[in-house]
Length: 236
Ligand SMILES: [Zn+2]
Image 1 (spheres, rainbow, N blue to C red):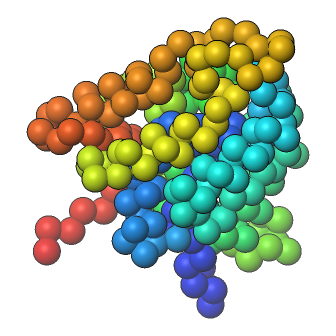
Image 2 (tube, rainbow, N blue to C red; image 1 turned 135 degrees about the vertical axis):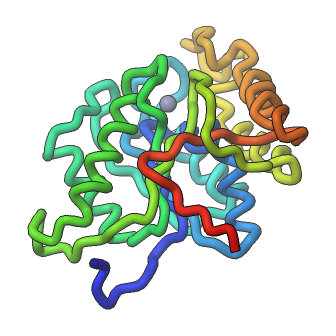
C-alpha cells in the first residue's frame, strides 16, 4: 500500500549511463512532458569508463539534454561504471530513489543488450521495484508500489510489445542526443579521442530503429518497449 503519500513523478527512468534514457526513450519523455506529466531520470553511474569525454563534460552534456527534454528530476547515484551488480549495497540505492520519488511507472534498459551494464541496470531496477513495495524492507523509508515496469532498448533491437508514436517530437529527441557531443561527434574534441561504435553514425541508427518501430502502425517514428508483468488496458 502506498499510504497517504501520493504520486511523486509520473515516469521514473533508470539508466546505466547519462545518454541511455535519451537513446531508448527520449521521444516518449518529451511527449509526456508536453502532456504536463513529470519525468525524472536516475543515472546509475557517471560513465567514467567511457572511451571519450570525461565525467565533467558528460555531466554538462546531461544537464543540457535534461533541459531539452524538460525533465523535473535528474540524479546520479554514483555507482561504479562496469561494476554494476544486483547486490544489496547497489540495489538499495535504487529502492531509495523509487521511494523518494514515488513514480507511477518505472522504465529501465532491457536486460538483453550488448553492454553488460545496460543489462545489469535492467535487472537491478526489477529487483528495486519489487523491494520498494515491501514495507518491512528498509522500514525507515515508506514503501512504494509502482504500477508498471517497462524496458526500453539501447544497443540491441528486440520485438516490442508496446510502441509510442514519437513522430511529432523526434527532432527534439535528436536535439537531446546531440547534447552528448563527447560521445557522438565523428571527429575528436580531445587529443586522446578514439573512434567507437558511438562515433560511427550511431545517431542515424537510432533514428532508423525508431522508423522501423513505427512501420507496422504506419508511423514515421516510434519507440518500442517491453513490459514486465501485465499492463492494464481499459476498453472504456
Ligand atoms: Zn550506456
